[in-house]
Length: 464
Ligand code: SF4
Image 1 (cartoon, rainbow, N blue to C red):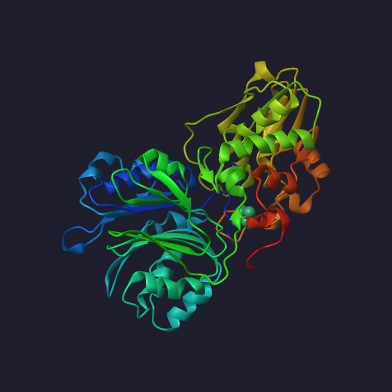
Image 2 (cartoon, rainbow, N blue to C red):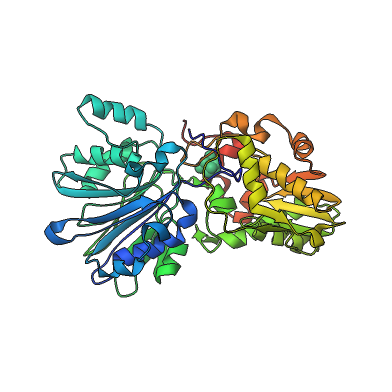
């Protein structure tokens, strides 16, 4: 379980992956631009491997920081001779994530040559598998699930990477999307529950590309083909894109938080556009929890779409009551409650001329600890709002995530210990309303059982 704390009081995504195979394409350069599009999924490190170069070796560059910091001269990447590339951005949920050795892709040598792996998610049985390998003499250099997978692949007798993965992947329990390469092919795969997203696109001029979110395809001019199925492996090589199912009975459990908060608004998941889904969440929230008010505002940036849907449905003006300072820099994990609260102070400010004397509906996508809501309502009231009605476009978060998302321990979740009325009192809200899961699911127009919603329901599809 991850106990990382974030200054924004939000659940946080834990990595973005991409990779492609093509003849005559600047794949390292394309991977860099795909990573720019995936930057919201992780800001602590970035890396690209590409090749094969001379002696069939893979080129690699990775480091701590944003994509623009690790690859300040991205145009130089055009010069790298390659048929394939794999990229990664990392969000860390502990100090280990900021260790240079844990940056990805992870590159290792094994008997068939080189192997480079990028990973998004969290393996639930990694300790058990690690111990088993250590008993057999394996020496680990990092704490990453990528290295564990590399060791497991290396121990297979199989002559090719697909067969090795077909042996290994059914033994992995948890949430993962891997993109990896052996210098000959690029392989993308999703866990048997499909917790984390991964999609396939074709490149203009030939070849294929994989990415955690479809917004990466738009950035590089690739045409979306489809999302990978849970448990599916797609192999990209000189003969095209080939699919193979690795899990006997896969089930669909895409993380519903991808729609609510994580994914970029211009991405599509399971054919649904994230921005439009969020707007619909807001509309339904207005119907489920109507309130007499003067204006509606959203917490920037992820709640603006839901707030505009709320305003539209309620027939109220949408106003920009809160302004976000975009130049504070990344929000690194802050060790104390006080520091987290100060983080909000620095980042968000109320527009006094807009909120003064007004009854404000403040829409946010989720409440985790409650510290952000408390601070924002205080800011609004200090700026002259007469009432602040909190409306949340998701149900109360009552459980931790075990599938790769950075969440506090459940005891630190405000909704684990308190009902909505108590939360309103604690945050200073004049009223509160959480969108029900039925309405979230109805917004998506998907069957309820194809989504993971465990942190809202406590019903975990794979036991921790
Ligand atoms: Fe997403 Fe919550 Fe499920 Fe984790 S537990 S995968 S955050 S819905």
